[in-house]
Image 1 (cartoon, rainbow, N blue to C red):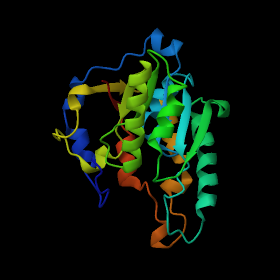
Image 2: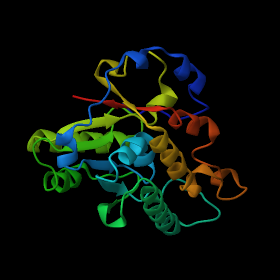
Image 3: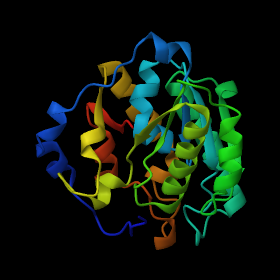
Length: 245
């Protein structure tokens, strides 16, 4: 269900005070996962780092990253950059950020779907050529609230069903519109990814590499930061959350 991402959203203090995550099972990172490098599928540049940057770092770069769009619509009325310029900036930021997590540029693929108009059918076709039984496809939750996040999640779910791959979903904007124990969120499927100190530090540094998103592009309201401090606080936790089937 697409939801408006408006106002300040649920404050991080509410999530930090919620006791439920302490009881979630810890995601197992066993030899089977390392033998078949997970495919991390990001709707936009930065989703892969916000959602599972710590997990990527703990897998020591043993993942492949596919970014579905270039995020060129993040500032549609920007007075500073054109959409083409933003696309180039965000691609470069992805390479820089992922390198900080141990991912080489050769392991990153930019799929080039239009930001805001993901072609689910074409994405399913592309994914079925990459996935195989047991391989993890790690992507945004189908109920995350953002239309691109949900479209990518649906395509990944279909491709996993067709290939026998394992769908691993992560929330991004859920932390904004939901609240602890929100009935629309599949908390019963939640797994906790406990981050090492090094992985958490690498994730925070990688997030900071997305300068076009964490800082204003310019003084105009249309150029405001997409990820202000209150939003970034949700991704500084010592753990990450994923949903298993």
